[in-house]
Image (cartoon, rainbow, N blue to C red; front, top):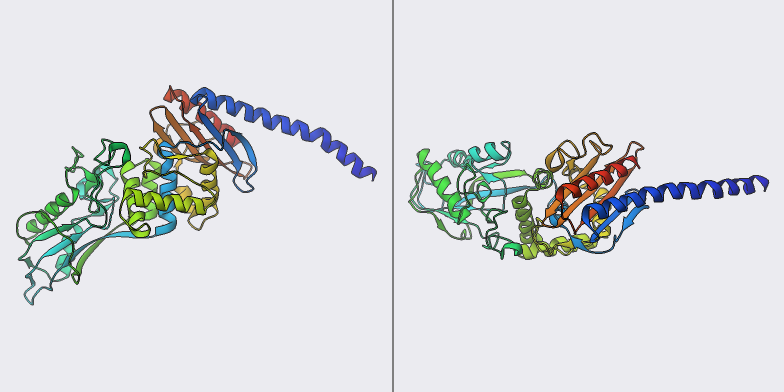
Length: 410
């Protein structure tokens, strides 16, 4: 009994001191939050394993997400499509070639919603050579025994609707996102040098492929046209995208708006009844609710200011994804502080360098940083910083980096 009483006395002395130290650290984080983002900002830091709250401020209040919306988009795409899934772009024929290899009919280039479809020149210049080479279909035709085509080459982009943008741009092509299409090409740019956006990516894709076939001695009738692939048409050649895990990596590490919007439309086409931004947003909202989180989704990239969630909901998603079967590709898709992507130059020399995988977010007056920190103690912390009253982006980044460093030291 005496030992129990003594232990209780020791705990009574030590516990308040420990709690005081923790609250002092949290108080400093809150000050840094308001200093960087103003009063309209929220914060939550938890132990990702236990859910124990380490620090918070206005954690339950919804905020504009900016590119933190991509966390919800990529989580949904990875979980619903699978990290190893590849998107197919197919060349189909409405009749078989004859014995001489002449296809006396039409070809249909059917898009599958691949954001990485392009020319080798574009992919080499802007994507490090990683993507889907449209012109590889020419070799596929040869392997199928086709030497000549008498008919036309049609573009089929019907997997998606033909709205080119998101709510932020009134669904027209946005200056921040190339035109969205079920048969995209070179991220919507009109040239392999990235100069200007195409007015119709599907027509451009089929015109470029037609030109490549002509150079290879397989000419088709002139003119790029749109048509739905007829029932019964047989696939002759197919190219496949990088894996969804690779596409999610490009989306998050480099905050690629175009990839995010294409992935959102793709999950809409597969699981939401339509290849539209609205249908995809509905899939993302349902996925987040089913995993103890929540989001008001209007697009996939976060460009539309009405995308909203609270720090508590963002952290809820992060914790759920850490326990999900696609945890590794999701976490690895986030930029590593001080090392890669949008945070390659941030947090260097601090405790966060090389230890925090994060997603940034920026709009006018909005700055966000959410993700995981892997501490020297072996613990994983999940956090979300949503600043909605930013007047200085550099100050916001500085205070976010200080908070991240403190989380990494915790």
